[in-house]
Length: 65
Image (tube, rainbow, N blue to C red; front, side, top):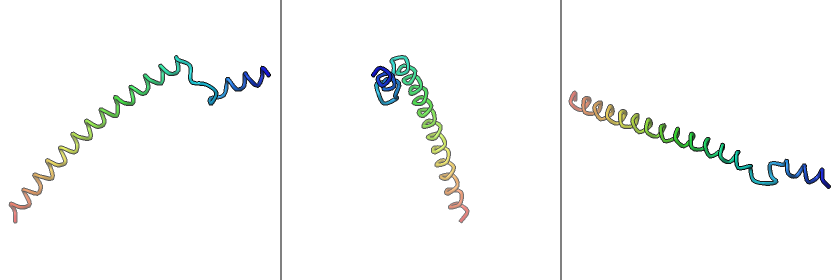
């Protein structure tokens, strides 16, 4: 009986993660979330630059015609 119980407790499906592991996971999640926010800002800056470039290019091509 004890060996079954011990094996069940070692199973990743048996019980929630220890609190130290949850804290570690929360910290990792915060770092990932922060990185995603930074990527969104960079992406928006590129979108703005591309839109500005396309706007300037279309105005230039219209004035040449």
